Each structure stands twice: as structure tokens, then as C-alpha cells.
Length: 313
Length: 259
Image (cartoon, rainbow over all chains, first blue to last red; front, side, top):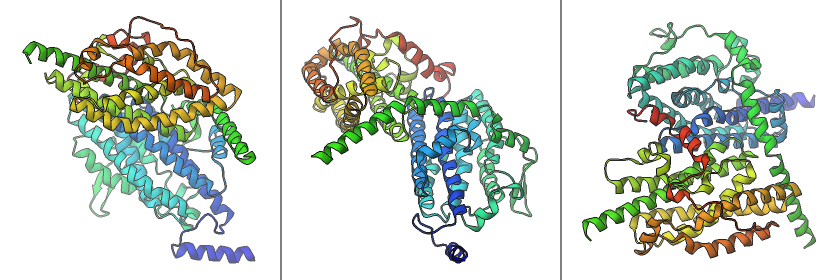
């Protein structure tokens, strides 16, 4: 009975757009759902460092290198806020990292695709970050306070990332024929994975309904996907680039772009771990974590020594 | 000043800016290689900050070098289209990232050095070097604070961490001699109050490093010059060629492209 009453009060707060804070009562499923979503988001940020880091040592100008390095650093920072936001729900960073390493926690599948040319740095910023922003702007209104506040800060930096990526694409599209081809090739490879970032269609989305009711998510996968497509097409066309979707066309009556069928077989294949980079990305993270074990242990040992000194002093 | 004297002075200034710029540039590249591999997220953020600062310093010096060269060369041309023998980076910065201990110790040795060097260069009579150094020294003080804290933390942490840091110190120590080798450019420019003689920093460097190494519970290695040929003269370690092959790959493959 008590729980029913609490649940009703909880829903009232949600409906009135009052943020839920760490010490507030919340249904266990709400907590679990948030832990899953926030840690998944955090993992995406840190795994997402790898495909970009792959070109950091080959960035072709000092300016490009500085910007890319700062961008990857921002992503580490985003991961950090998000792990901290998850900690407010009672789960330690080490725990969620273990789940990642055991293959039990997911991250955005888009980061399992390889980055094989410099133009991919443009495509990731323009399309992948562009898609992420659409989702994250929406999440600024999420019902959980710490997550919502993390999103506000993250969105500011993400919009810089998106511009940085688009700038690379613009430079290439206006460059030599080879550079323009590089940009087109990157668009061909990154377009569909970016469209898929919003997840399954609404009818097939496992976690969506409850998440919407609790305002963990504010808009559905398909609504967000449509917004991303609508805002991106013009940005590509103005550069003379072609999107790899023959069914893409402006629909006067809906006021949106129609788009072709998504290859869900590929989507589920990558989600299930058969993507080209899944094993590689995870292995990289596990190795870095294991190689750093002695450093973390030593830092703790040193802190303990300092603490015991202060106690005896 | 006669035309020849002017040319010589510019030649020396150009070489000196390369020496300063290349050293920061190569070290920042090594840090870039380490991106996403740090022991924890906070350290990934912190060390990347150091790398970004170094990259900014390198950019300023290379830009100035390009200006002095005055033939339309850009800082990117110097960074991405110069041959290995024309680089003036010092050997210590070229050493690859073996593990976190080596990365930390390399940084610590350089931070102490840069702290002394840029402090002096903040008084340089060359307005540009003076300006870059005044900006850089603020960053370098933070770098040194960070690497010093980690040296003590890991030196005093566990037996394993102490051994790893000691091993890194022993491995890298032979490269530290070059820090105090006076290049011909700096010998000439020092007379005009523009440059600092590297050898003049040695006593203070040895004193400061020793203090921290001892506080960390570590042993200062024996001095052992490893080479009479130095990066400041354009003679490099075997490591640099691979680094440049990777770093310069795109601009060399597409020489007409702008990025």
C-alpha cells in the first residue's frame, strides 16, 4: 500500500516536471532504468574516444590536431560527469566498468565502425555527434536532476564538436577532387549507422514506453531520428554531397523528409557484438584498465598512508 | 647591422625556435599517442591537458620560425613537411611510451626542465619568445605540480609502483644529458640576451629533481652520457623516423591539399 502511495506521488512529481534528486524516493525500476541508460551513455563517451584517437596521431594540421585532441578530452570529461551521475544512484564506477568489460553493458554501436580516413573525423563530428545532440538536447529535460544537469553541460560542448566535424567536411568538400571523394566516401559509410543511433522503431523499442512515462526519455526514437534527418540533409546538399539513400525526399504534406528502409539486420548484428570493431574496442579498454591497475592501487595505498599519518598526528 | 649579420641572427633565431617548438611538438605527440589509455579517466583528462598545452607552445614557436624564414612557409609546412634531419627535438621527448611509469617520469624530467627554461626565457629580449614564454610558464607550473605529485604518490605508493618508477628513471636518465647541451644557435643568441644556455640550467635542475626523487623514496641514477650526437643538432633516435612517418603521412601523400 505504502509503495502504491509513493508511486502515485512520484508520478505526480514527474507529471508536474519536478526533478527527482538522488535522496528522493524512486521506484527501483526507475533507478535501474536510469543506471542502465546513464552508464550506457558514459560507456559510449569513453569507447567513442577510440575511433577518433585512431586519427589523432595523423591529424594533418596543428590546428586540426589541437581541436581533435580537445574534443577527445571533452569526451573523457563527459564520461566522467556521467559516471558521477550514475554514482548518485548508488552504483560505483568500478561496478559499471566491470559490466562493460564482461560484455554485459552496452554502448552506442556506432563506435564499433572503423575510422579509415581523415574524413571520418568530419563525419563523426557532423553526423554521429549531430545525432547525439538531438538526443541529448531532448534529455536536458529528463526527470532525473543530476542526469539533466550533466546533459546541459554536455550539450554545450557537443555543439562545438558538431561544428568541428562539419568544418572538416566543408574543407574536404571544397578541397581537391580526392578530398571531396574522401568526404563522400565517409558520408556513404557513416550515414546509416548515424540514422540507426536512435535505436529501433518505436514499436520495437524494449524500454521506451516506461521511460517516456517516467520522463527519463522525453521523445521517442522515431521522433528524434526524424529531427536529425530533417536538419542534416540540407547541410550535406549545400556541399554537393549525396546521401546514400535513394528514397530520401522532401515530403511537402508532412513537412519532413521521407527516408528509406533501415537495414535492421545490420543494426542488430552490430548491437549483438558482430560489428567490425566490437572486440577491438572492448579489448583496448580492458587492456588500458588492466595496465593501469598498479597505478590505481598505488594511489590508494598512498592515500591510506597519508590518512593514517593524519590520524596519528 | 650588416645584411650578413642580420641573416646569421635570423638563422640562429630560426634554429632556436625549431629547437623549442619541435621538442614540445614531439612530446605532445607522444601524449596524443597515449590518449584513451590512461589508468583512469581523470588521468586521461589531465595528461591530455598537458599535451594540449605543449601543442599550443609548439604551434607558437613554429609559427614564429615560419615568419622568420619569411618565404611563405607555414607552421604546418614546418610540422608536416620537414625532413627528420631538420627537426631539432631532443632525444628524451622521442622515447616511445613504454608504460605509464615511463610517460610520467619523462614528463616529470621535462617539466622541471621547462619550468627553469621558460622562467628564464620570460626575460628574453626577443619580444615574441618573451611573450610565448610568459604564457607557457603559467601552464608549465601546473604540469610540474601534477607530475611531481604523481612521482611522490607512485614512489611512495606500493613496492610495485616504486620499482616501476625507479626502472623508468634508470631507463630515461641517460637521455637527460642532452638537456644541458648548448646548441650553436643558443650560444650565439645568449650573447644578445635572447636565448638561455642550456648548460646554465643544469645545477638547478639536478638540485630540484634530486629533492623530489628523494622525497618519493627513489634513487637518483648515476650520470651516463649515452651519445655525443644530439637531437638539437638534427641527429635523432631511431624512434623519431617512425613517429614522423605516421604524423606526416597525410600532408605528404596529398601535397596540394589544404586541411
